[in-house]
Amino acid sequence: MKKIFIYIILINIFALNSFSAELNDCSMYSKLSPMYYKCKTNNFIKNTKNYQKKEWTEEKSKLKDTKKKIQDAKNKVLNQ
Image (tube, rainbow, N blue to C red):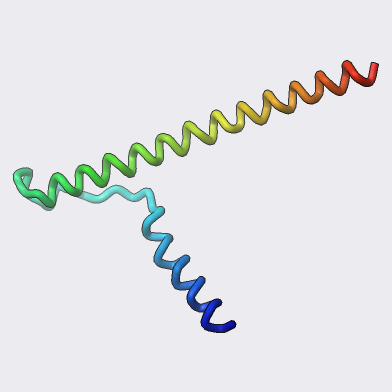
């Protein structure tokens, strides 16, 4: 049981770094080096994921609000 618990904790600790939204500073690489382009690509991917997550949560909340309004209207009609 202890091994499973420790294993789960370790996985969570290592997974936290993969979900971070911090952007890397690419200015330390030469603009002609492959590491610079790799860094820029990673930053672009992180920005895209953050944008999609933000937009999806906004749309999801709009959808929930719409469902609630429809349910309220349905209840009003059926209770009258």
